[in-house]
Length: 132
Image (tube, rainbow, N blue to C red):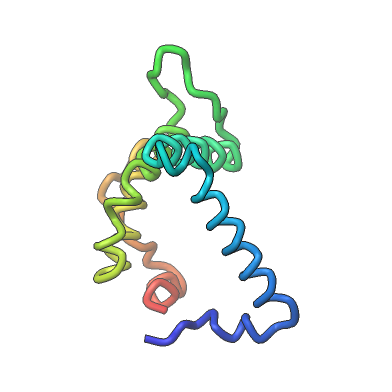
């Protein structure tokens, strides 16, 4: 399988920027908090990213004191964040199946037609774009 993004590395500055980002990620992994408690910091990063995603979509990103999340966008983002690591093996062998599962997790509180969850829209070029 060829990498469709590989030509981007030929653009001026992209390879250096990618290397710099990789070095930064490696440095974060070597921080003492991550060496001793990597699972806890990974869980915190996952929750923070879910909250940020919900905020980008216009939802209130704050977690309620009670722990009961009622905002459907935040709830979906948290469900997706929780499932991501477990979906990696599925992504590798059946990426469309993983995308369908992510859609179910993210949108289950947002749609009235539950049969539409996990299925691409039939209009336009959605199917071919997903296959690509």
